[in-house]
Length: 132
Image (tube, rainbow, N blue to C red; front, side):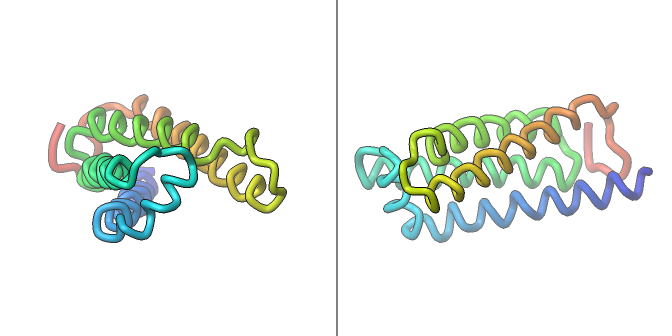
């Protein structure tokens, strides 16, 4: 089971690092989408996109390395709660295709949140980790 957990950590950590890369280095492509979801200004949207990228980066590195996983999970939980309710409120969407996309992303995020919260029950330090 230790190897399964390690493989899961690697997959989950890489998922978040990929998300962080997009948010930090490709923020300009996400600003318009953030504005379309109600973020008022382009500057505010860029700040939000990069800020969530930093949360994803810290969380992804933490999960991958097993270093400070409680902090990493907290960063990712903040990311998921904020992004899910602001960017994917499918219950407000009238267009059926947009509603379906938002519903999928919202519930995917809730599943990730549930998995992250369940990881808090795993005793520290994690096997093959760099820290506490």
